[in-house]
Image (cartoon, rainbow, N blue to C red; front, side):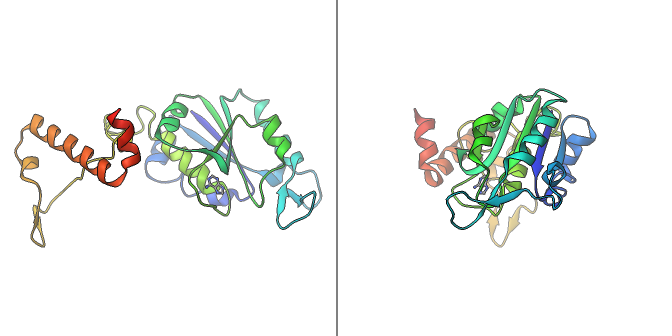
Length: 228
Ligand code: ADE
């Protein structure tokens, strides 16, 4: 998989992709992420990428020209399965969308900034608009990093234990059960004895019951769907 991210603050995206699982995915040649500086696609002397909003009001709007130039340039090199725009008014991101996108070959993500992008970019180029939650970030970069992380870790071969992505929270519409490691006892709290029993079936049963209980308690909205 290849993800191209377009941003006015590309440095913000350097770190998330140079550590741990995402770095390993790149080193193994499974998923590569390329960050493009939108300013490089501005033809103005000052490398301008935003301008005042028609109709007035506070906040600048990202201009059409640099974005269109960058998208045209990238599209001339390969075909994209989706051109995603990160925005608080997009479709809420979830595990189902992450699963869907993890099967794609080439993705482009445009990070929003300021008051957003000129609406015509959305109409002409964007195929998918994603919000990572009902709050407003200072830019779409962190959202792009979150989306990329959630997608890349699902690609077979990225996680060392192939099954571990399958047992994540949400993967079967339930939250994950609690987990424990050594020591056996801490401040009077002991690890549930079933986990030391060596009984695989019993452990599986316990984990499932815990996952159901946890989901019921913490996320009744998800539990409702699971029950159906
Ligand atoms: N940009 C600003 N806030 C955002 C959000 N919640 N999701 C995606 N992109 C954003």
